[in-house]
Length: 545
Image 1: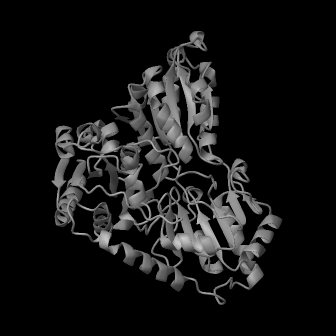
Image 2: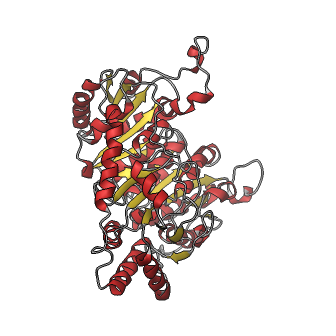
Image 3: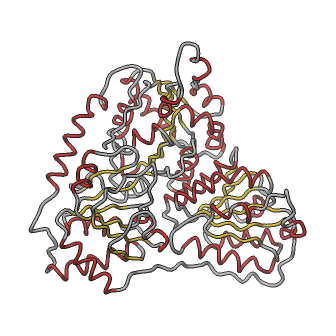
Protein backbone atom coordinates (compact mmCIF):
# COMPACT_ATOMS: atom_id res chain seq x y z
CA UNK A 1 0.00 0.00 0.00
CA UNK A 2 1.08 3.61 -0.43
CA UNK A 3 1.84 6.05 2.37
CA UNK A 4 -1.50 7.80 2.62
CA UNK A 5 -3.39 4.49 2.65
CA UNK A 6 -1.08 3.21 5.39
CA UNK A 7 -1.85 6.22 7.58
CA UNK A 8 -5.60 5.78 6.98
CA UNK A 9 -5.39 2.06 7.83
CA UNK A 10 -3.59 2.88 11.10
CA UNK A 11 -6.30 5.41 11.96
CA UNK A 12 -8.92 2.73 11.34
CA UNK A 13 -7.10 0.22 13.56
CA UNK A 14 -6.88 2.85 16.29
CA UNK A 15 -10.66 3.23 16.23
CA UNK A 16 -10.92 6.58 14.44
CA UNK A 17 -14.56 7.25 13.57
CA UNK A 18 -14.44 10.76 12.14
CA UNK A 19 -11.83 12.76 10.27
CA UNK A 20 -12.30 16.49 10.71
CA UNK A 21 -10.72 17.99 7.62
CA UNK A 22 -10.37 20.79 5.15
CA UNK A 23 -9.20 19.73 1.68
CA UNK A 24 -6.41 17.60 3.06
CA UNK A 25 -4.14 16.07 0.41
CA UNK A 26 -5.71 12.70 -0.39
CA UNK A 27 -6.30 11.77 3.24
CA UNK A 28 -10.05 12.40 2.91
CA UNK A 29 -10.46 9.80 0.17
CA UNK A 30 -8.18 7.28 1.87
CA UNK A 31 -10.08 7.58 5.16
CA UNK A 32 -13.52 7.51 3.53
CA UNK A 33 -12.67 4.22 1.74
CA UNK A 34 -12.25 2.71 5.22
CA UNK A 35 -15.57 4.12 6.49
CA UNK A 36 -13.92 6.89 8.51
CA UNK A 37 -16.47 9.66 8.04
CA UNK A 38 -14.98 12.93 6.79
CA UNK A 39 -16.34 16.08 8.49
CA UNK A 40 -15.42 18.87 6.10
CA UNK A 41 -15.36 22.24 7.87
CA UNK A 42 -15.46 25.77 6.43
CA UNK A 43 -12.16 26.85 7.97
CA UNK A 44 -9.29 25.03 9.61
CA UNK A 45 -9.60 26.50 13.10
CA UNK A 46 -13.07 25.01 13.35
CA UNK A 47 -11.80 21.65 12.11
CA UNK A 48 -9.29 21.62 14.95
CA UNK A 49 -12.07 22.55 17.39
CA UNK A 50 -14.32 19.71 16.17
CA UNK A 51 -11.54 17.19 16.80
CA UNK A 52 -10.87 18.87 20.16
CA UNK A 53 -14.48 18.62 21.35
CA UNK A 54 -14.66 14.97 20.31
CA UNK A 55 -11.60 14.10 22.43
CA UNK A 56 -12.83 16.11 25.43
CA UNK A 57 -16.16 14.32 25.64
CA UNK A 58 -14.59 10.88 25.25
CA UNK A 59 -11.89 11.77 27.84
CA UNK A 60 -9.33 10.79 25.22
CA UNK A 61 -10.55 7.19 24.96
CA UNK A 62 -11.43 8.01 21.34
CA UNK A 63 -9.06 10.49 19.72
CA UNK A 64 -10.20 13.39 17.55
CA UNK A 65 -8.21 13.71 14.32
CA UNK A 66 -7.81 16.72 12.03
CA UNK A 67 -6.12 16.71 8.62
CA UNK A 68 -5.36 19.70 6.40
CA UNK A 69 -3.40 20.61 3.32
CA UNK A 70 0.13 21.95 3.49
CA UNK A 71 0.91 25.67 3.38
CA UNK A 72 -2.17 27.80 4.04
CA UNK A 73 -4.14 24.90 5.56
CA UNK A 74 -1.44 24.27 8.15
CA UNK A 75 -1.06 28.00 8.75
CA UNK A 76 -4.80 28.50 9.32
CA UNK A 77 -5.05 25.54 11.70
CA UNK A 78 -2.30 26.86 13.99
CA UNK A 79 -4.67 28.81 16.31
CA UNK A 80 -6.74 25.68 16.91
CA UNK A 81 -3.61 23.75 17.87
CA UNK A 82 -2.65 26.57 20.22
CA UNK A 83 -6.08 26.44 21.85
CA UNK A 84 -5.96 22.64 22.27
CA UNK A 85 -2.43 22.85 23.65
CA UNK A 86 -3.42 25.47 26.22
CA UNK A 87 -6.36 23.28 27.23
CA UNK A 88 -4.37 19.99 27.31
CA UNK A 89 -6.58 18.17 24.79
CA UNK A 90 -5.31 15.07 22.94
CA UNK A 91 -5.82 15.72 19.22
CA UNK A 92 -3.95 14.09 16.34
CA UNK A 93 -3.03 16.63 13.65
CA UNK A 94 -2.03 15.38 10.19
CA UNK A 95 -0.89 18.25 7.94
CA UNK A 96 0.41 17.82 4.44
CA UNK A 97 3.85 19.14 3.55
CA UNK A 98 6.08 19.93 0.62
CA UNK A 99 8.08 17.00 -0.68
CA UNK A 100 10.99 15.92 1.53
CA UNK A 101 13.37 17.30 -1.09
CA UNK A 102 11.98 20.76 -0.22
CA UNK A 103 12.15 20.38 3.57
CA UNK A 104 13.56 23.39 5.42
CA UNK A 105 13.48 25.60 2.32
CA UNK A 106 12.08 28.98 3.33
CA UNK A 107 9.49 30.42 3.01
CA UNK A 108 7.75 27.04 2.69
CA UNK A 109 5.70 26.49 5.87
CA UNK A 110 7.00 23.61 7.95
CA UNK A 111 4.41 22.38 10.45
CA UNK A 112 6.91 20.26 12.34
CA UNK A 113 9.00 23.39 12.93
CA UNK A 114 6.29 26.02 13.41
CA UNK A 115 4.03 23.93 15.66
CA UNK A 116 6.91 23.28 18.06
CA UNK A 117 5.42 25.40 20.85
CA UNK A 118 1.80 24.29 20.49
CA UNK A 119 2.16 20.50 20.37
CA UNK A 120 3.15 17.89 22.91
CA UNK A 121 5.10 15.90 20.28
CA UNK A 122 5.61 16.21 16.54
CA UNK A 123 7.42 14.46 13.68
CA UNK A 124 7.82 14.56 9.90
CA UNK A 125 7.48 11.28 8.03
CA UNK A 126 10.73 11.37 6.04
CA UNK A 127 10.55 7.74 4.83
CA UNK A 128 7.42 5.74 4.09
CA UNK A 129 8.84 2.82 6.12
CA UNK A 130 8.70 5.03 9.23
CA UNK A 131 4.91 5.51 9.11
CA UNK A 132 4.10 2.66 11.55
CA UNK A 133 6.86 3.73 13.96
CA UNK A 134 5.91 7.42 14.00
CA UNK A 135 2.17 6.78 14.23
CA UNK A 136 2.82 4.36 17.10
CA UNK A 137 4.81 7.03 18.94
CA UNK A 138 2.09 9.60 18.22
CA UNK A 139 -0.71 7.51 19.71
CA UNK A 140 1.43 6.61 22.72
CA UNK A 141 1.98 10.31 23.41
CA UNK A 142 -1.75 10.95 23.01
CA UNK A 143 -2.58 8.30 25.62
CA UNK A 144 0.21 8.80 28.17
CA UNK A 145 0.83 11.60 30.65
CA UNK A 146 -0.73 15.04 30.46
CA UNK A 147 -2.77 15.25 27.25
CA UNK A 148 -2.00 17.56 24.38
CA UNK A 149 -2.09 17.78 20.58
CA UNK A 150 0.35 15.63 18.61
CA UNK A 151 1.38 16.25 15.00
CA UNK A 152 2.54 13.90 12.24
CA UNK A 153 3.50 15.80 9.06
CA UNK A 154 3.02 13.89 5.81
CA UNK A 155 5.08 15.22 2.84
CA UNK A 156 3.59 14.89 -0.62
CA UNK A 157 6.17 12.39 -1.90
CA UNK A 158 5.34 10.05 1.00
CA UNK A 159 1.69 9.88 -0.09
CA UNK A 160 2.47 7.75 -3.15
CA UNK A 161 5.59 5.99 -1.88
CA UNK A 162 5.03 2.23 -1.61
CA UNK A 163 5.24 0.54 1.78
CA UNK A 164 6.58 -2.92 1.10
CA UNK A 165 5.08 -5.99 2.75
CA UNK A 166 2.28 -6.16 5.30
CA UNK A 167 1.51 -3.16 7.52
CA UNK A 168 3.03 -3.99 10.91
CA UNK A 169 0.85 -2.05 13.33
CA UNK A 170 -1.04 -2.94 16.50
CA UNK A 171 -3.11 -0.29 18.38
CA UNK A 172 -1.17 1.42 21.13
CA UNK A 173 -1.90 1.39 24.86
CA UNK A 174 -0.82 4.23 27.12
CA UNK A 175 0.66 4.03 30.60
CA UNK A 176 -0.58 5.38 33.93
CA UNK A 177 1.63 6.49 36.80
CA UNK A 178 1.01 6.32 40.55
CA UNK A 179 3.00 7.76 43.46
CA UNK A 180 5.24 5.94 45.91
CA UNK A 181 3.36 4.38 48.85
CA UNK A 182 5.40 6.38 51.41
CA UNK A 183 4.32 9.60 49.73
CA UNK A 184 0.69 8.48 49.84
CA UNK A 185 0.93 7.71 53.58
CA UNK A 186 2.44 11.13 54.30
CA UNK A 187 -0.14 13.07 52.29
CA UNK A 188 -3.04 11.07 53.77
CA UNK A 189 -1.83 12.05 57.24
CA UNK A 190 -1.53 15.71 56.22
CA UNK A 191 -5.06 15.69 54.78
CA UNK A 192 -6.49 14.15 57.93
CA UNK A 193 -4.78 16.75 60.12
CA UNK A 194 -6.12 19.72 58.14
CA UNK A 195 -8.92 21.63 59.88
CA UNK A 196 -10.35 23.43 56.85
CA UNK A 197 -9.25 21.62 53.67
CA UNK A 198 -10.58 22.47 50.21
CA UNK A 199 -10.27 20.17 47.19
CA UNK A 200 -9.34 21.98 43.97
CA UNK A 201 -10.29 19.57 41.16
CA UNK A 202 -9.13 20.05 37.58
CA UNK A 203 -9.55 18.61 34.12
CA UNK A 204 -7.26 15.68 34.92
CA UNK A 205 -10.12 14.25 36.99
CA UNK A 206 -12.27 14.10 33.84
CA UNK A 207 -9.55 12.40 31.80
CA UNK A 208 -9.00 9.91 34.63
CA UNK A 209 -12.74 9.18 34.98
CA UNK A 210 -12.50 9.68 38.72
CA UNK A 211 -16.01 10.97 39.43
CA UNK A 212 -16.73 8.37 42.15
CA UNK A 213 -13.36 8.54 43.92
CA UNK A 214 -13.53 12.33 44.09
CA UNK A 215 -16.88 12.14 45.86
CA UNK A 216 -15.63 9.46 48.23
CA UNK A 217 -12.54 11.35 49.35
CA UNK A 218 -14.52 14.60 49.75
CA UNK A 219 -17.01 12.84 52.00
CA UNK A 220 -14.29 11.05 53.98
CA UNK A 221 -12.41 14.28 54.65
CA UNK A 222 -15.55 16.43 54.81
CA UNK A 223 -13.68 18.68 52.42
CA UNK A 224 -15.71 20.88 50.06
CA UNK A 225 -14.83 20.70 46.36
CA UNK A 226 -14.34 23.49 43.85
CA UNK A 227 -13.58 22.75 40.21
CA UNK A 228 -11.57 24.70 37.71
CA UNK A 229 -13.30 25.91 34.57
CA UNK A 230 -11.72 23.04 32.59
CA UNK A 231 -12.57 20.57 35.35
CA UNK A 232 -16.21 21.62 35.64
CA UNK A 233 -18.51 18.54 35.75
CA UNK A 234 -15.89 16.25 37.35
CA UNK A 235 -17.79 16.66 40.66
CA UNK A 236 -21.61 16.80 40.90
CA UNK A 237 -22.59 20.37 41.68
CA UNK A 238 -25.80 19.26 43.38
CA UNK A 239 -23.67 17.42 45.96
CA UNK A 240 -23.78 18.92 49.49
CA UNK A 241 -20.01 19.49 49.39
CA UNK A 242 -19.89 21.23 46.00
CA UNK A 243 -18.65 24.81 46.06
CA UNK A 244 -19.17 25.16 42.31
CA UNK A 245 -16.75 26.21 39.61
CA UNK A 246 -14.47 29.18 39.24
CA UNK A 247 -13.01 31.22 36.40
CA UNK A 248 -13.04 35.02 36.13
CA UNK A 249 -16.40 34.72 37.85
CA UNK A 250 -17.03 32.40 40.76
CA UNK A 251 -19.47 31.48 43.50
CA UNK A 252 -19.68 32.94 46.96
CA UNK A 253 -18.98 29.50 48.45
CA UNK A 254 -15.76 29.09 46.43
CA UNK A 255 -14.55 32.50 47.52
CA UNK A 256 -15.36 32.04 51.19
CA UNK A 257 -14.12 28.48 51.66
CA UNK A 258 -10.89 28.99 49.70
CA UNK A 259 -10.19 32.21 51.61
CA UNK A 260 -10.74 30.50 54.98
CA UNK A 261 -8.98 27.22 54.17
CA UNK A 262 -5.80 26.00 55.83
CA UNK A 263 -5.01 23.45 53.10
CA UNK A 264 -5.77 23.26 49.40
CA UNK A 265 -5.53 19.86 47.73
CA UNK A 266 -5.13 20.28 43.98
CA UNK A 267 -5.95 17.08 42.10
CA UNK A 268 -5.73 16.75 38.32
CA UNK A 269 -4.90 20.44 37.94
CA UNK A 270 -1.84 22.45 36.92
CA UNK A 271 -2.26 25.36 39.36
CA UNK A 272 -1.27 27.61 36.46
CA UNK A 273 -1.79 31.29 37.18
CA UNK A 274 -4.01 32.74 34.46
CA UNK A 275 -6.56 35.52 34.11
CA UNK A 276 -9.22 32.83 33.83
CA UNK A 277 -8.75 30.83 37.04
CA UNK A 278 -9.26 31.26 40.76
CA UNK A 279 -6.21 32.80 42.42
CA UNK A 280 -4.82 30.71 45.28
CA UNK A 281 -4.34 32.87 48.40
CA UNK A 282 -0.98 32.80 50.13
CA UNK A 283 -0.45 31.16 53.51
CA UNK A 284 -2.12 27.84 52.65
CA UNK A 285 -0.64 24.34 52.84
CA UNK A 286 -0.55 23.18 49.22
CA UNK A 287 -0.88 19.53 48.25
CA UNK A 288 -0.51 19.20 44.48
CA UNK A 289 -1.21 16.04 42.50
CA UNK A 290 -0.85 15.98 38.72
CA UNK A 291 0.51 13.62 36.07
CA UNK A 292 3.01 16.18 34.77
CA UNK A 293 6.11 16.94 36.83
CA UNK A 294 6.56 20.22 34.90
CA UNK A 295 3.46 21.65 36.60
CA UNK A 296 4.62 21.01 40.15
CA UNK A 297 6.25 24.08 41.73
CA UNK A 298 5.69 25.96 38.47
CA UNK A 299 3.47 28.83 39.64
CA UNK A 300 2.42 27.64 43.09
CA UNK A 301 4.95 26.24 45.57
CA UNK A 302 3.86 22.77 46.70
CA UNK A 303 4.38 21.66 50.28
CA UNK A 304 3.55 18.10 49.24
CA UNK A 305 3.43 16.66 45.71
CA UNK A 306 2.06 13.45 44.24
CA UNK A 307 2.89 12.58 40.66
CA UNK A 308 0.32 10.31 39.05
CA UNK A 309 -3.01 9.64 37.37
CA UNK A 310 -5.82 11.30 39.35
CA UNK A 311 -7.87 8.11 39.71
CA UNK A 312 -4.92 6.07 40.94
CA UNK A 313 -3.84 8.82 43.34
CA UNK A 314 -7.33 9.16 44.83
CA UNK A 315 -7.78 5.39 45.08
CA UNK A 316 -4.54 5.06 47.03
CA UNK A 317 -5.29 8.07 49.24
CA UNK A 318 -8.77 6.77 50.09
CA UNK A 319 -7.32 3.42 51.18
CA UNK A 320 -4.67 5.09 53.32
CA UNK A 321 -7.09 7.61 54.87
CA UNK A 322 -9.38 4.75 55.86
CA UNK A 323 -6.44 2.81 57.27
CA UNK A 324 -5.25 5.77 59.36
CA UNK A 325 -8.72 6.71 60.60
CA UNK A 326 -10.42 3.39 61.14
CA UNK A 327 -12.53 3.84 57.97
CA UNK A 328 -14.10 6.99 59.40
CA UNK A 329 -12.08 9.88 57.96
CA UNK A 330 -13.82 12.94 59.38
CA UNK A 331 -17.37 11.72 58.81
CA UNK A 332 -17.99 11.57 62.57
CA UNK A 333 -16.11 14.70 63.60
CA UNK A 334 -17.45 17.39 61.25
CA UNK A 335 -20.24 18.08 58.79
CA UNK A 336 -19.41 20.80 56.29
CA UNK A 337 -22.35 20.31 53.91
CA UNK A 338 -24.90 22.53 55.71
CA UNK A 339 -22.54 25.52 55.68
CA UNK A 340 -21.78 25.00 51.97
CA UNK A 341 -25.48 24.85 51.17
CA UNK A 342 -26.26 27.90 53.31
CA UNK A 343 -23.77 29.97 51.35
CA UNK A 344 -25.13 28.61 48.06
CA UNK A 345 -28.69 29.60 48.99
CA UNK A 346 -27.52 33.02 50.15
CA UNK A 347 -25.57 33.64 46.94
CA UNK A 348 -28.40 32.46 44.67
CA UNK A 349 -30.81 34.64 46.61
CA UNK A 350 -28.65 37.66 45.84
CA UNK A 351 -28.68 36.79 42.12
CA UNK A 352 -32.28 35.63 41.81
CA UNK A 353 -33.57 39.04 40.60
CA UNK A 354 -31.29 38.67 37.56
CA UNK A 355 -31.86 34.93 37.11
CA UNK A 356 -35.64 35.42 36.97
CA UNK A 357 -35.74 38.92 35.48
CA UNK A 358 -38.65 39.89 33.21
CA UNK A 359 -36.79 42.87 31.75
CA UNK A 360 -36.31 43.51 28.05
CA UNK A 361 -33.90 43.38 26.37
CA UNK A 362 -33.54 39.96 27.98
CA UNK A 363 -31.11 39.54 30.84
CA UNK A 364 -28.64 36.79 29.85
CA UNK A 365 -28.91 35.26 33.31
CA UNK A 366 -32.62 34.61 32.72
CA UNK A 367 -31.72 32.56 29.62
CA UNK A 368 -29.10 30.56 31.52
CA UNK A 369 -31.47 29.90 34.42
CA UNK A 370 -34.43 28.90 32.24
CA UNK A 371 -32.27 26.67 30.06
CA UNK A 372 -30.69 24.89 33.03
CA UNK A 373 -34.03 24.23 34.71
CA UNK A 374 -35.78 22.95 31.61
CA UNK A 375 -33.38 20.40 30.12
CA UNK A 376 -32.27 16.97 31.27
CA UNK A 377 -28.88 18.09 32.57
CA UNK A 378 -27.54 14.55 32.90
CA UNK A 379 -28.05 14.14 29.16
CA UNK A 380 -27.10 17.63 28.04
CA UNK A 381 -23.62 18.88 27.12
CA UNK A 382 -23.07 22.61 27.45
CA UNK A 383 -20.26 24.90 26.47
CA UNK A 384 -19.77 28.63 26.32
CA UNK A 385 -17.75 30.97 24.21
CA UNK A 386 -14.97 33.25 25.40
CA UNK A 387 -15.69 36.57 27.08
CA UNK A 388 -18.99 37.47 28.70
CA UNK A 389 -20.90 34.20 27.99
CA UNK A 390 -18.16 32.23 29.75
CA UNK A 391 -18.17 34.46 32.83
CA UNK A 392 -21.96 34.53 33.06
CA UNK A 393 -22.44 30.77 32.65
CA UNK A 394 -19.57 29.11 34.56
CA UNK A 395 -20.72 29.81 38.15
CA UNK A 396 -24.45 29.35 37.58
CA UNK A 397 -24.72 26.22 35.43
CA UNK A 398 -25.09 23.28 37.82
CA UNK A 399 -23.55 20.06 36.47
CA UNK A 400 -25.01 16.78 37.73
CA UNK A 401 -23.08 14.26 35.61
CA UNK A 402 -19.51 13.97 34.32
CA UNK A 403 -18.48 15.34 30.91
CA UNK A 404 -21.66 17.37 30.54
CA UNK A 405 -19.83 20.70 30.45
CA UNK A 406 -16.85 21.81 28.40
CA UNK A 407 -15.20 24.72 30.15
CA UNK A 408 -12.35 26.34 28.25
CA UNK A 409 -10.43 29.56 28.26
CA UNK A 410 -6.72 29.46 29.10
CA UNK A 411 -6.49 30.74 25.56
CA UNK A 412 -9.63 32.63 24.58
CA UNK A 413 -10.21 32.41 20.84
CA UNK A 414 -13.65 33.72 20.04
CA UNK A 415 -15.88 31.20 18.33
CA UNK A 416 -14.11 28.05 19.49
CA UNK A 417 -17.20 26.84 21.33
CA UNK A 418 -19.07 26.28 18.05
CA UNK A 419 -16.45 23.76 16.93
CA UNK A 420 -16.10 21.85 20.18
CA UNK A 421 -19.88 21.48 20.56
CA UNK A 422 -19.97 19.87 17.10
CA UNK A 423 -17.24 17.47 18.22
CA UNK A 424 -19.20 16.72 21.38
CA UNK A 425 -22.33 15.91 19.36
CA UNK A 426 -20.34 13.55 17.14
CA UNK A 427 -19.07 11.80 20.27
CA UNK A 428 -22.49 11.72 22.01
CA UNK A 429 -25.15 11.88 19.27
CA UNK A 430 -28.04 11.10 21.65
CA UNK A 431 -27.34 14.05 23.97
CA UNK A 432 -28.57 17.61 23.64
CA UNK A 433 -25.48 19.69 22.84
CA UNK A 434 -25.71 23.45 23.47
CA UNK A 435 -23.28 26.26 22.75
CA UNK A 436 -23.86 29.80 24.03
CA UNK A 437 -22.00 32.58 22.26
CA UNK A 438 -22.00 36.33 21.71
CA UNK A 439 -22.03 38.61 18.68
CA UNK A 440 -18.27 38.78 18.28
CA UNK A 441 -17.90 34.99 18.44
CA UNK A 442 -20.53 34.19 15.84
CA UNK A 443 -19.09 36.93 13.69
CA UNK A 444 -15.80 35.06 13.56
CA UNK A 445 -17.05 31.51 12.92
CA UNK A 446 -20.74 31.71 12.01
CA UNK A 447 -20.27 30.26 8.53
CA UNK A 448 -19.45 26.92 10.13
CA UNK A 449 -23.09 26.58 11.14
CA UNK A 450 -23.32 25.27 7.59
CA UNK A 451 -20.78 22.58 8.53
CA UNK A 452 -23.25 21.33 11.14
CA UNK A 453 -26.10 21.52 8.60
CA UNK A 454 -24.27 19.60 5.87
CA UNK A 455 -23.04 16.90 8.24
CA UNK A 456 -26.39 16.61 10.08
CA UNK A 457 -24.84 17.53 13.43
CA UNK A 458 -27.92 18.56 15.43
CA UNK A 459 -26.45 21.13 17.82
CA UNK A 460 -28.26 24.02 19.49
CA UNK A 461 -26.64 27.46 19.35
CA UNK A 462 -27.91 30.24 21.61
CA UNK A 463 -26.69 33.70 20.67
CA UNK A 464 -26.60 36.47 23.29
CA UNK A 465 -27.26 39.22 20.75
CA UNK A 466 -26.63 42.65 22.27
CA UNK A 467 -24.75 44.22 19.39
CA UNK A 468 -21.45 44.65 21.20
CA UNK A 469 -18.47 43.01 22.86
CA UNK A 470 -19.71 43.40 26.43
CA UNK A 471 -16.53 42.34 28.18
CA UNK A 472 -14.55 44.96 26.22
CA UNK A 473 -17.10 47.68 26.93
CA UNK A 474 -14.66 49.79 28.96
CA UNK A 475 -12.16 49.77 26.11
CA UNK A 476 -14.63 50.71 23.37
CA UNK A 477 -15.83 54.27 24.04
CA UNK A 478 -19.47 54.47 23.10
CA UNK A 479 -21.15 57.61 21.83
CA UNK A 480 -23.77 58.66 19.33
CA UNK A 481 -20.98 59.33 16.86
CA UNK A 482 -19.28 55.97 17.33
CA UNK A 483 -22.46 53.86 17.56
CA UNK A 484 -22.44 52.74 13.94
CA UNK A 485 -18.75 51.84 13.87
CA UNK A 486 -18.64 50.01 17.21
CA UNK A 487 -21.84 47.99 16.88
CA UNK A 488 -21.21 44.37 15.90
CA UNK A 489 -24.79 43.11 15.84
CA UNK A 490 -26.86 41.46 13.17
CA UNK A 491 -29.91 39.33 12.49
CA UNK A 492 -28.39 35.95 13.21
CA UNK A 493 -31.72 34.22 12.67
CA UNK A 494 -31.51 35.13 8.99
CA UNK A 495 -27.85 34.13 8.82
CA UNK A 496 -28.63 30.71 10.29
CA UNK A 497 -31.63 30.20 8.00
CA UNK A 498 -29.51 31.17 5.01
CA UNK A 499 -27.03 28.46 5.97
CA UNK A 500 -29.75 25.80 6.31
CA UNK A 501 -30.30 25.78 10.07
CA UNK A 502 -33.64 26.18 11.84
CA UNK A 503 -33.82 29.46 13.72
CA UNK A 504 -36.01 31.79 15.77
CA UNK A 505 -35.46 35.25 17.15
CA UNK A 506 -36.40 35.66 20.85
CA UNK A 507 -37.09 39.20 22.08
CA UNK A 508 -39.10 38.65 25.27
CA UNK A 509 -38.06 36.48 28.23
CA UNK A 510 -41.33 34.56 28.32
CA UNK A 511 -40.84 33.54 24.68
CA UNK A 512 -37.58 31.72 25.37
CA UNK A 513 -38.93 28.43 26.74
CA UNK A 514 -41.45 27.83 23.91
CA UNK A 515 -38.67 28.56 21.41
CA UNK A 516 -36.32 26.23 23.30
CA UNK A 517 -38.83 23.38 23.14
CA UNK A 518 -39.12 23.77 19.37
CA UNK A 519 -35.36 24.01 18.94
CA UNK A 520 -34.71 20.83 20.93
CA UNK A 521 -37.18 18.89 18.82
CA UNK A 522 -35.50 20.16 15.65
CA UNK A 523 -32.03 19.03 16.84
CA UNK A 524 -33.37 15.50 17.30
CA UNK A 525 -33.87 15.33 13.53
CA UNK A 526 -30.20 16.10 12.89
CA UNK A 527 -30.83 19.69 11.82
CA UNK A 528 -28.95 22.31 13.87
CA UNK A 529 -31.01 25.03 15.54
CA UNK A 530 -30.16 28.59 16.54
CA UNK A 531 -31.97 30.93 18.93
CA UNK A 532 -31.11 34.57 18.33
CA UNK A 533 -31.82 36.13 21.73
CA UNK A 534 -31.94 39.93 21.93
CA UNK A 535 -30.13 40.63 25.20
CA UNK A 536 -29.25 43.57 27.35
CA UNK A 537 -25.85 45.17 27.57
CA UNK A 538 -25.00 43.09 30.64
CA UNK A 539 -21.46 42.92 31.99
CA UNK A 540 -22.31 41.88 35.55
CA UNK A 541 -20.29 38.92 36.82
CA UNK A 542 -20.25 37.03 40.10
CA UNK A 543 -16.80 38.21 41.18
CA UNK A 544 -15.18 38.52 44.59
CA UNK A 545 -11.93 40.18 45.60
